[in-house]
Length: 269
Image 1 (cartoon, one colour):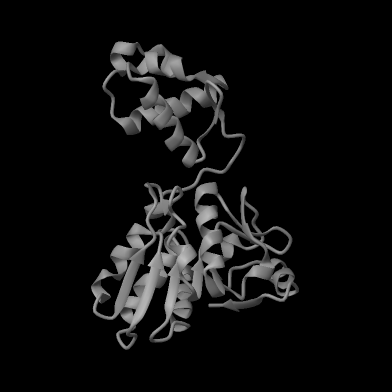
Image 2 (tube, helix red, strand yellow):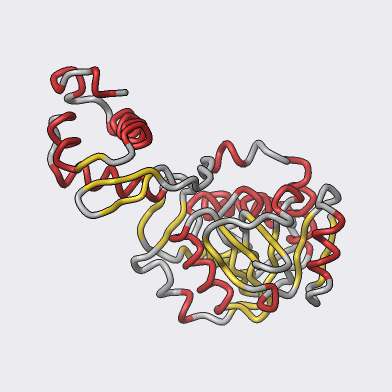
């Protein structure tokens, strides 16, 4: 526990380290007051509240009146860079097929995430593809598309930056999406289940995904096999709202069969 350290020792520690130690204390104590944390780290109450907000966005804690409690068993969301190294071959195959669906002159919405980032790279590799507009809430997705700026125009949605996924969320994360009508939306997620639909680990990003779905004429969910049959905390949409699921050969057969029974087309890349 960080309680063994004095306030003098903890004063001035970097924000990342302070937040990690706050998360550890909340997990250990079960409830920690904002004022106690402010005294412990010799920072303002405003700073502590900001730290707790960041930790809540990561699924590490849950804010309550006066302080914070453990997140209640929510699975921790990995950083984008770590997620990109998981199931790389499957994500590359999914991305190649997804990118092949895009036609010249189309407007597409490209969600945040490691698989959708792979889609962006595949779009760049398609040198014959021109006059495409990509609307994205992912800062890294926008940067990945920059080498093809002469062929692909990029529109970033705006909103508040969420560092873990380099994503943009509410407030103001959905305003641009409300003004467009895209041909295709490529949506990433953490789970696809026949009963619970498409789900995500983070609630803020789930809200933006809903706006992306509403902005597109056709919705394509890209999810590697480890996410099929999985249900996470934040619901994005029902299966009736998607047109195509692109997954891979590692997806559980029974879970895929149940999804197909819901009249969703499934392609195994």
